[in-house]
Image 1 (cartoon, rainbow, N blue to C red):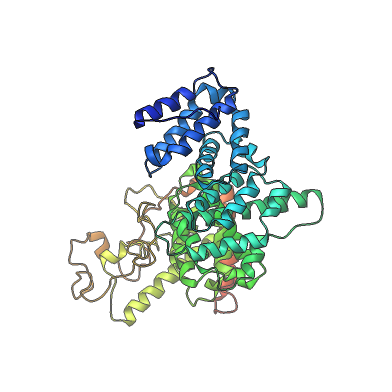
Image 2 (cartoon, rainbow, N blue to C red; image 1 turned 90 degrees about the vertical axis):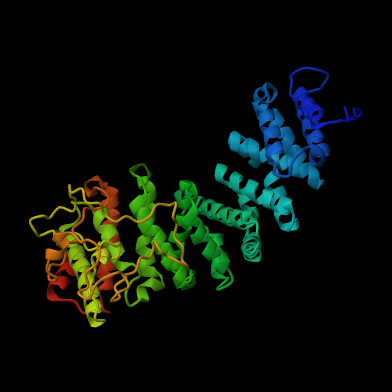
Amino acid sequence: MDFITYQFDSAEQFYAELNDLLQEGGFHESPESQVNLFISLIVQYQDEFMDSSMQDLTRCCYRLFDSDLFQTNMLSISDAIIDRAIQSQSEEDMWISYHVLYYAGKEFPKVYEWMLKSEFFAKLKYQIMQTEGTRLQALAVSTMFEMCRAQPLNARDLALADEDFLHYLLDLVERTRKDADEELNYGTIQLILAFNEQYMVQQQTARAVSNYTPSNLLLSALADRPGASSTFGENLIFMLNRSEEASLQTLILKLLYLFFTSHRTQLNEFFYTNDLHVLMDVMIRELWDLPEEQEQLRHMYLRVLGPLLTRTQLRREHTTYKRAEILRVLGQLGGSDLNEELKQYLWEQEQLEYEQEMNRLHSEGRRLTYRDRQSSNTARYQLPSPLSSSSSFSSNSSTASPRLASRASTVDDSTQSDRRPSLSVGSNSNGSNGNGHDTDSEPARSRSNSSTNLHGYLSTPPIRSVSQSSQTTQRLVERVLRDWLVADLGPNQSVSGDQRTHVQLAQ
């Protein structure tokens, strides 16, 4: 039907013809030829009748998907579009064909599986490496990422994700770090994460059938690039901070776990210390805020938390960043059935944190104000002793407890106004009088407590009912405590006889 020519006087005529092409029957040789003509018209008139925001193209794609023509002949039509995308050398044609396939796969995931059975993956790799700086490159990156998420790659396609390709992608992340449009930068990082998942699946499959475990090419590539992938590390944590998609968070956490548990020091210490501090803020927030239906994701965070504390440069800090908040969240998540020795040990450490803070304030000639005691940095010392009469971690009190801000207010490593609250305890910095009390109305209960009472006025209820902690959560919390707190009071610190007893019991 190439002899047919079209001429449109208006956008209405153009879209009316597109609708007619999606009707079954007529003079067309096959459904595949109808759809090919449909795409050809869009390619020819995209600049004249379609906006640059891609909304018109998206609507055309979904008109195709909703048509009886496509629904009845999905496989044959999809194969025809895939063949067209592979064979085409025209940027305008590939721009439309790739979009149709991208949206088709999003709507019908099996289309991505059909794409993986063709040579399309190899075509996408070529487009990514040979069309840098064009709009087609970002689209090829996004499409390849979705294909990698659809199912495990076959050996032929996984072989295309070699170290040369990985180095190119990592370099691309660095080159696009200042681009106003972040789509390519973040899309490339997502593709790298998807390849890491593919390598992990490959390793798992190989171990199941033989004693041979293939190497993770991504870890090898990153280990060979010391200091050359800083943008990748920074943006990886930034994406974890901002993402609300559990699947993307999981991909990031899996790579972080491999970093922190690697036998290679250059991977253990891949991130800058400031970035690790931001990561710790994110992890504390997520451990508090994740709902019960995302308990598995919380388990992922706990699995990463242990090696983050013990295998990265955080282990060398004189005082672990956000140590008190970490103690508190682990105490809450551990539940009332937490190992008794660890429970007592945890309580002792929280009291030690409190005493150290009070000593610091005393040495500076300051005192803790009521407003300070309500901040998350001081209210953290609220767990009653497990040996006291009120030995339950939970409480029925209606007093509001401090909570890390919701995802709507994400971690900002520049301001940290709500993520890293600091004690405002200057003589007049918090509106306090000469006695160190806030000039605001302070409840009599708080005023009446002696400074020797370690947690009387700080015993606000926990954020979540710890009785809800699953056995898996409890087990992971105990693992973190054993690996971190016990090691933390190891050869670098002097401990009391009682503390040594608890260390031995915990081990």
